Image (cartoon, rainbow, N blue to C red; front, side, top):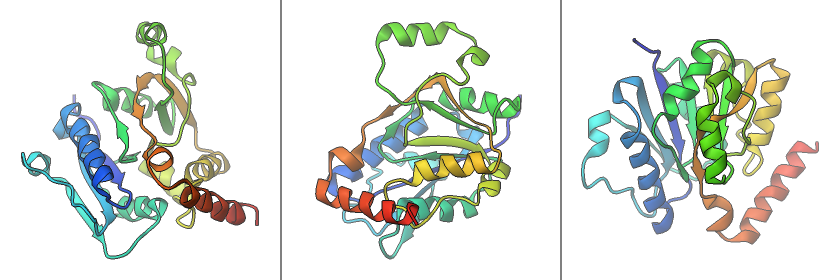
Length: 226
């Protein structure tokens, strides 16, 4: 069966040595657990302090497109810029500290292809093995509108994304919350599912200067409270 193309968009934070390694692991996981004929991959980031190393040339095999910006840009605006370059009918926005597993793309795409949702978010909360085993046993339909919606990944139809007006490129910390509100205002059926579980290590909050992150939250609060 031929499926519509998905554009996977990975916006990377300023590439410190640590985040460069994490970005590489994120991209490697996508390549490892995703059929290459079903997607194109766009990595967009600022001029890195430490470039993502591809010693094994895995990105050449999938034809990854790398967009390097000459100045710092909010990750939300990075996603808008990459979306303009996307060829896919579906857009999967994945932050660079997120790890996917076998079957993630086809299971998320299932809901969009059958018109059960316009956008879908995988379960992103740490779970017990008992919970995961239960989630495996239920049907795809039973898994819809279950799970926990976090901030590191959303898959949406290109048409649905256009209706939202895209991400608020001025936001630095609350872009996801704002985007979910935009989906609601545009009548987009945004649904979580526990049929796809991913790992989010929260690089932005756990591995960077907290005063700087708190400053970004304050910045966004002022914008959203206007």
